[in-house]
Structures are given as C-alpha cells and as structure tokens.
Length: 474
Ligand code: NAP
Ligand code: MG
Image (cartoon, rainbow, N blue to C red; front, side, top):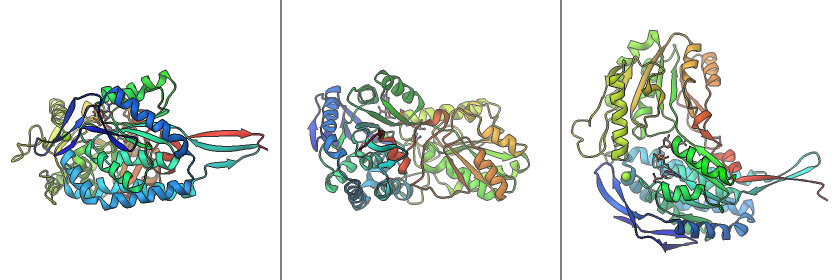
C-alpha cells in the first residue's frame, strides 16, 4: 500500500488541515493500492507561502548551480528506476516494457536536457541601446494529468528549476505516487526547501485554488480542454500567465508510395501505445483510396502483434484504461462509431476475452469514417483508430488540418518532396516523419485548441521567465 495522507511543504511532510482521503486504484486489478490526502485551500496556502519564501534565494542562484542541481536530480532519478517503474505500472496500469522504455525514460530526459541547455542559456542579452535580463517568473502552480505521471511533471519541474522559479505541484488524483518519488529524488539531490512543494487533492479544490491564487504568478497545466478553459477564466481575473498543454486528434498521413505494412503498424502502435491515452496519438489514418483495401488487410494481419493484457507481462503492448470512468468514455465512443455509417474492422465494445477484471478495451479500428464524424473529430483517449480515405495530397492535408486541434501530425511515405510538403503543411506543434525519434531539446505544444505555450528544452524554460528590458544602463 502506498499511503501519503500528508503534503510536502517547505521541505517536510505536513498534516493536512482536512481529514478527507482519496483512494487510488490499480486499473489492471481494480484493487485499491493506497490513498492520498484530499488537500484543502489552507494546505495550498501554506505551500504557496513556502514557495514564495524560497523564491528570492532560489531565483538568485547562478545558472551553473541550477545546472548542477538538475544533473544531481537526473542521477537520483536514475537510482530509483525500479521504483518509478513499479509505481507507474501500479497506478496507471502501464505495461512494464512501455513503462521502462517510455514513461520512465521521458521523465529522465527532461532533467538531463534541461541541465545541458541551461548551461548555455543566455539569461541576458545586449541589443542596440538595451540590456535584456530574463528573470524567473516567480511561484509556478503545476497541474498534471495521469497518462504520463513522470514525463508531464518532469518537463514542468525541469524548466522551472532551470529558470529559478519555485513551484507547487498538484498531480492527478489517479496517479499521485510517481510525484512522491520525484519528491524523494529532489530531497536526495538537495533541492532547497520550499522550492518544490507537493499538494495532493482534487482538481476542483486544489487545481481551482492554484489557478485563482493571488500569490501564484504562472500556471502550467496539462490536461483536457474543458479544464484549460476554466483555468484561463480564473487566471484572467488577476492577469496570471498560463501555459496549457491540451488534447489532440492527430492525423497520420499515409502517402501513396508508403509501405503498407509499415503504415499499418505505425497506425496500430499509435492507438495501442499507452492504451491510446496519449495526447499526441495519431488516431486518424488518412489513406489513399487506392491503398485502402491493402491497408485494412495489413491492419487485421498485424493487430495480434499488439497484445492487450497484464501490465506485468513483458510481451504486453497495451494495458487497461486508467479508470472505470475512462473505460466508459471509450466504450461510448466505440458505440458512436458503430452507430455511425463507418465500418467496424476490428475490436468493438466490451472487454477482450479473458480480461474481465481490469478496465481493458479492445483495440478498435473503424474504416469508411467521414472526416466530420464524431469519432474523427473528438479526442477519445483510448485505443480507437479512424481510417479515412483521400483522393490526392491536397485533400489529405485539408482533412488532416480539419479539426479544432493541432498538437501533432505524422507522415509516412518515401518521396522526399511529398513528405516535406505534407510535413510543412500540417498546422500542428509537432510533426513526425516516418517515426523519427523525439528531440527533447525541441519545443512541444499545440496550435489552436491544443494549447498555449510550449514545453521541453529552451522553449520550456522561457515559459518560466519574464524578459526585462533596461535602457540607459550606465
Ligand atoms: P483533466 O481532467 O483535465 O485533469 C488534468 C488535471 O487537472 C488533473 O490533475 C485534474 O485533477 C485537474 N483538474 C480538474 N479540474 C480542474 C479545475 N477545475 N481546475 C484546475 N485543475 C483541475 O485531464 P485528464 O483526464 O487528467 O487527462 C486527459 C486529458 O489531458 C486529455 O484531454 C489529454 O489530451 C490531455 N493531455 C494533454 C497533454 C499535452 O501535453 N498536450 C498531455 C497529456 C494529456 P483531478 O486529479 O481531480 O482529476
Ligand atoms: Mg487509478
């Protein structure tokens, strides 16, 4: 059992001023694995005060000191590899192989990358008659979702520490325990007290409290669009800066010269990875009409290579949805697809055979989906692929750009001109050509309703800084 019914404030565990707790469930077993405190407004106030008190000293540290701190954090994070993997598997139901290669690794990469970048980062700059100095923004409130418990917290925390900002973190109530491990990492690495504060609790109390807190200067949020809107509304009252990493409905544009097997496997991996609970997941496969039948055949052929099952089994590719609520949402969308004129190719509603316990969904593929259909427009956050056909590349690009989102886009094919034209025409924050690996120094974030601001690398650090121009400096 993981029981953390206190909050981490000013370098120590502190009792909550309330006595309500929240159960945390392992979605693969449906069993309770621990509980956290449901924090109160008073708990949050204490944490914000601690972050405020720690800010003057921390913001005046040198970039070399902060780079060294980030490297020590990365070292301590690596020492806890097995614990991170165990905790993320238990709270999210994330399969062991994916947890090791992606969940654990991404969190680490942000600290290492920030350490490297901040050493070369220019916090000052001379222009014609001005001297520009970038000051840490102040106290940042960080609100994170459950689908990548260390990655999302780590990108925010690495950028904040690199910039010299102090923080209050509220992780998702679904997956709060990875953040407790981060707290242990920071303590061991020597993060000064008050620089990192952890308050657990609901979005309605702690999340809402953060976005409306007069002593918080910046809110960095990752989550759903609806909550993003509420955060902006609150933050607007005292002109608080916000950064929002929201949802997506990303296209995979399959060019007419693509290898069909490669394209089908790419599409399956997008819905199967993290059980489709990925904001950047490619969930609309745009396929040339002439390739359609071969593509669907290849999908059917390769789906069994992505087994759904027990997260502890190394051969499992896809685990359960994070919660019963999320499972119900996914089921509703699958039913909407069945009720539409689209054709069900694989999967469907209900649980996969033999997986009655746990919030497991079937890998589900629809074809003959119209670009305007609900399942092709709304983020499902589950393992559901919509296959849409196109006649020519211009039409493909138009369909690809035809949602309210713009987080990511994928292109699969061979002709360099067509790859380049497509990649450059997609209106999204991140385009991946032929499954190229991520670059942690490059910006991450969305166009349109996928968000505001950028994370990762130096762009991420900039979000936690305020540029100050001084003219006439003697
Ligand atoms: P969510 O419901 O928006 O929750 C995200 C976080 O916000 C949780 O910690 C939640 O607290 C908190 N929250 C809820 N209501 C709040 C309020 N009124 N004010 C402030 N905070 C509040 O999203 P989710 O279901 O956890 O995550 C899935 C969504 O996140 C998807 O839409 C996905 O696309 C998006 N996402 C985006 C990215 C990206 O980088 N662009 C990455 C991952 C996920 P609770 O603990 O009470 O739920
Ligand atoms: Mg859970």
